Amino acid sequence: MKQYDMQVDLTRRQVFWLLKRLTSYALWKRKRDAFATFANEYEVAVRTWAESDPEYMPADNLSTIYEILGLYDKGLEQLARGYRFIWKDRQPLELAVGRYCHLCQYFLPHPSYWERGAQLAPYPPKVDRLARLMRASEFQMEHAPFEVAASNDNFAQLRSATLLLDQDRYKYQFYELDYPVFPPSLQEIPPPQGPVIESGDEVTADGIWEPVKISRGKVLGPLSVGEKTEENNGCFNYLVKGTHAPNIKGRPDPRTLQSAVTSTHWRLLWEDTRYKDGVIPDESQYFLVAKHEDAPAEPADVPDVKTGDICPVFGVWRAEKYDDSPIQVAAGAVMPDLMVADNLGEKKMHWVTWRLVERA
Image 1 (tube, rainbow, N blue to C red):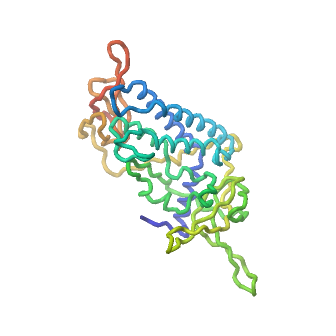
Image 2 (tube, rainbow, N blue to C red; image 1 turned 120 degrees about the vertical axis):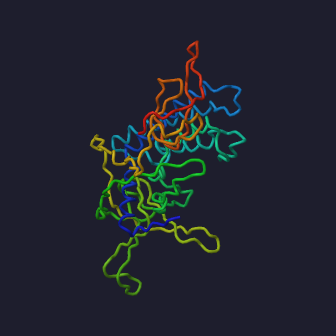
């Protein structure tokens, strides 16, 4: 696992950019829209799944799914007006992610794949397709701006740059999250604005804060005198006004292997005033697409795939025998089934063969 040094300028710029991305309206709107796509597909699945199928999707999840959508809508309405209390404990976007985690735990409580809230084995293809749609709404460290939990020693949400920058952290046992594409030029870290607060103090401004050690150049008896210096003491965090400044983790105790609870000073690097004027700027830089150096394969060179197979190429695919069925599928996604109307006009799921017609 790579370790990232917060003394290095590139690391500091990348973490700063990622924290702005994770707290942007564009990212939370994208989360909401991706989850809405999943919600529609899940409802169709519940209505059309064969009752004889032992791996049916629980209809009880629908109430949770639409509760989450409602929380996203409420939170986005507030964020678009520049309000950031939505990430505090028991507020809309914090609640939405909490309910989402609950949904993931009970997505398919089938004994072959699940035990006590944990997925134990790969889902069958039709279930995996829905699970991938659900995970498409998820972003690494999306809980970064959330209020810290007293039950967790008030530890900062982002305790290491590794959580954001190490690509292995985006890989989970049964799925993988998209790694962000950085713009060609990253903003310089602005000079500290102040104020400086301590762990446990009330946060005075929404924004990105840096943990620092404060020291004096000389010691005179019990007093520290001389020029004051502020030295980085860990990873930047996004803190919400009105919450309490968190602790950071100290070195693990060699006897218990538990990290010590360490208080620190925090200084404001950047105050977040986005959207307070009612304007949502262009935030497309947060969703750049990686450029592939390999020459694109021609459609004729890509073999056909079937429902449940892994898509080998990002592009437009058409189902065999159904010319009016073009869909765009990302590489690595599970190829879907197709809703086809029978002679009575009732739509049912069909497993089909897909052929690439255009590479994206």
